[in-house]
Length: 94
Image (cartoon, rainbow, N blue to C red):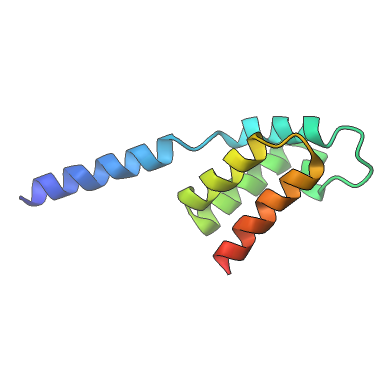
């Protein structure tokens, strides 16, 4: 019985962590959205810093919150929409 519970828990963990978009994909998308913008976020100054920013958010807020935020960002084509995605997740975490 314990084995089955453990198996279910591991399967759920693998499914939840494997479905979130990769941080590098999010950073590439953000670079395109912010192209030509005079005031991009500081973490967009270099790809490694951007990836680190999103990996930290994933650890801090959890995979589900990270997934919601980055899926929203990947669906956005305007700077205003990207900011709205992040603000919505930040409010949920407070």
